Length: 591
Image (cartoon, rainbow, N blue to C red; front, side):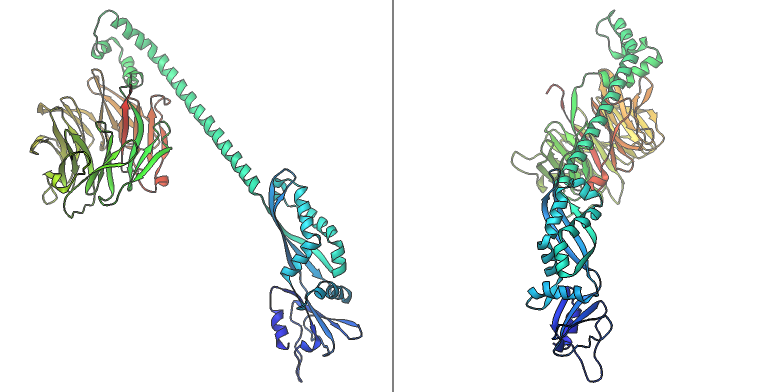
């Protein structure tokens, strides 16, 4: 065996070794010592024994036998799987025992006569030692320990002391016969899949209970706010009813003068809550990254659907709802997608012909008769003829009706339709009118700053500018323009809601939230409050939605919301990108 025996002692998986004395290497000049971490037992042919300590040569003859065993604690692992606990769970358990043989010839001889006698190779590996201990009662002791405790105690508490007493008692005969001693249970790791599943269910149930409690609190707050509003408006409504009972066919304009200024303000502020809904919101649709996302209008943090659009038209820039066809018109870098608002399926594709590239994208799109009209600050204003059924738009269908030259104008955006079929859009500080029949574009009006948004109500055109002005002019008399409101910063969106003969403008106001402006009544009130500055706002008969200045969250207030407080949904982290644009998917309230 020679030097091979020293090589075997370097094996970390070896616990003990029995070999003839002739196997120990020696020379005329020196004999190597027993390595650190090992000790030996020299056994003479006549049965006499002598312990050879670590660091000294064993001084054995060729006719002697040599037993080598580790001096330090020997780590032995015992495992059980899916063992039943006292409370009906199952446990996967693993313990690490520290065994040691004392440097006494009787204990080492017992090792030779018990464990090594059964090993034909003369070697006792750690795996083999662990198997012998497990079969001698180690596994039974671990199983018994598991059965007498609950899963929670085994998983979360230190029960090594109890287990050590149990396994020493269980292995008493084995330890006596082999000369070993159990010093400690170094580790006892227990995991329980059934307990983990039960705790997960408990956590989920607790979270759902907290959500239910939070929802109840929100609903109670909304109910309290509604009752408060009703109480505040009761006197106002009674006064209006008294005035209306004396005459027939009265309009809001006829009734409002009967109210004091404060009463008039409270009524107009809550008009959207008490007026019957013509259309109701079924989803809040977002354009973000390369996806269209549908949100629940009552719980905006709940994503109803996510649809990734093909990449051939580039990144998404805008989104608008087309109620005529139930489509979402999604502006991309080089074209517009028509997507089903119900299931997210791509209905049609409207692309700018040729090999074009763009840094931005189509920022507004709408259907006017049988044509799609869309604006793009770099590529200009484009129109496509709506293809016949079962066909998609092709390059031959596309026509540019207004193109920038040498970067002028810088911005082309915010297309809106008039009742006569013309389309209005903004180019820098001018409003252009385009006739869909022949694509002819003419300047309708010019203002003194860049235009961010347009909105139309019958013959009235409302204009929001970069310096915070909201202007109004009659389309039939565009030279007569007057200012409705002056904000403290840019107004990036503008929406009109009509309540019979009253017109309300809904505008974002950054740190002031969302404002409601009744220009003719000279009433301006805060419609929605938010902890985040509001960059853009959208509204229907039953809901107000704001997009934060950082485009990372949506703030939603419906008619049941408490006071002016909106429900915030921080979505940027969930979506993995910022929100480009929003629209409201609506349907008739009676549908």
